[in-house]
Length: 545
Image (cartoon, rainbow, N blue to C red):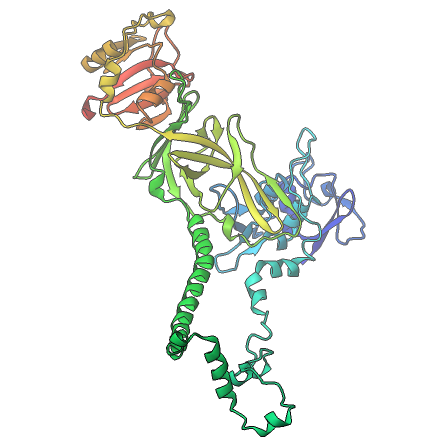
């Protein structure tokens, strides 16, 4: 296999295979002016003269019959898992979109391998190979230690602290009793030893036994009326010692178990992810309790059937599905010795960045093709969820970092509160709105107030546009009170919220344009709103009544 080297500004990168060189040129890493060689010492040849580019400077594809592998990924943020081409992974690594802890798999029968052992990708992560945009700016890249490959054995040791702990043996834990330094005293040792006899007269007298001397000494110190109870008291003390010692041991054991078990149990409980049932329902952005005129700017609905609605008071809304997923960041085996930080995104104004904890839930959004849905104007593909009392926090990933071998995530959070339940129907709430007078373009299309527009839509009317007539159960309407924020606050999250399709737009003369309009569906009533959230048209579905 032929290997190639790339000459950089400060060093030589390589060796790389021919497929990696071709993929790097297709990814924009190798340019026509990049120098290549078959050895690290040269001679060097420009890539434009090595058959990698056409005469116009366009990167050429692989020769026919070349087998270019595809890679599945594990550990990347977002909902994308692959398969990816190598050129795509090279682009991700140079733009800071590929975490150093990502693992790759080219075939299901082969094991997962870290990107630190796949040839050209570590060079992109270290910054040896970078990508220059058309305007000459350097793309964002990640930074990891340059000697990461030399520290692989240290990394493996850090990855398995339990295996290292098994090698530690407790010396003295199984020592025999004979080796113990403790001294056991007998009853004879505890007895009082009398002084030696020096007087001849005393020595000639009969010597009492040690037990008799001890008994006499004790008897002389105790009153006469209490001497008869001495033997009984001694027996009770010995019996109490036999009964108390097991109780004390059991109490000490219980305290030790509580001291060790409670923190372990609490830590295990705190790491349990939030249950799925905790996030179901309708949620809108939190409002200050002191302001009655404040209106929510965003609404989120999670429903039992797996559907999801993201509502923005201004801009595009979205209706799709969500899937409860397992977090792969907690199982990552990447443990760098130095501090590593990868920035994926920046928090939108008003969104608070905070650390992602193990108890936070993680879900993926699906049902979109090109443009991802937006949360309060910020594009999202997946969400972290967290319950904080009666509030729900939803967030999107902004940063990943490794400090002292520990992996942490940072997310930007939006605080939501549950929509209060009401027994009134949507139609009754809309009919109770006060009468208003039209202004501007609202009178050009014979727009009516919401109450009259509902009656007009139920009866139906014939619309004419460019000599074409159509009968629809709808009516132009207006309101200075009702907008997207009012609907979220008083009616909650709609059943459906999405951009208005082209065939659904109502033609009008000299009226408001429906370009970029949104559709909010509550029960059998469809409300058309402008991109700014203003009410424009109302339509009813009599089949759903």
